[in-house]
Length: 77
Image (tube, rainbow, N blue to C red; front, top):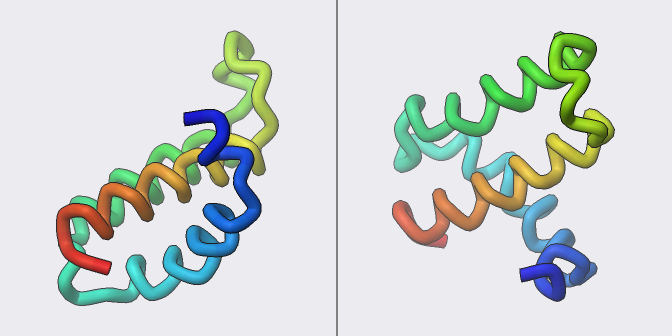
């Protein structure tokens, strides 16, 4: 798992695919909200979650990776 997360090739894929997946009509709005709501919540209220010492960008990137994998598996690449 860590090898994949640290892979530059994987992150290149994630950054190329995230916008098309978010704009795709094949991916339901509920799936898109599974990515957008936690990311926005963490960006807006990081002080409310002091037990998570992760940076906003790191959390967003992990969510992007998770969303891209999930959407491509369920709705095709």
